[in-house]
Image (cartoon, rainbow, N blue to C red; front, side, top):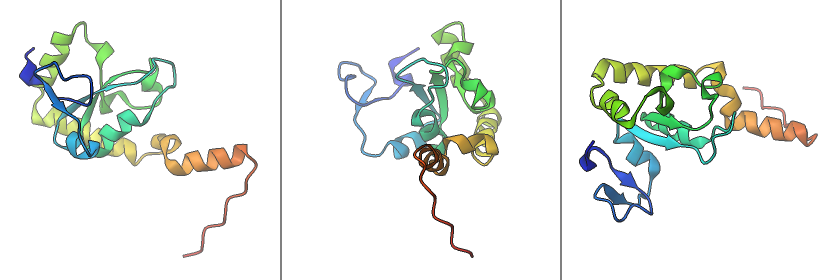
Length: 145
């Protein structure tokens, strides 16, 4: 594994050769990369944040480390799970050796997931309805088309 294999964005990486510094727009950075390390702030069952979805929306394959039961919520063919590899070198080689067909399959699987009912619990609409229901608030009726 070599420093040029990675671009590290954000603060705290200044002393490393791979450091690129900050970025103004996360999506434009993700869009320009095949993979992104996606580490949750906590490794608790069911704790899944926007981090993996930001990758999905950008067409970037997440290399995920977080909720141990992520595969209960998000199909395993949409991300690379760090825990599936015995070591970092095996993971890096898997990513470096990935052919365009496999990369395309990941991206197609992501699109299929984002347009499926399995994604619904992670949408803004679902969140709003869940909070409104918990607070006993009534939703406005949608205008007829």
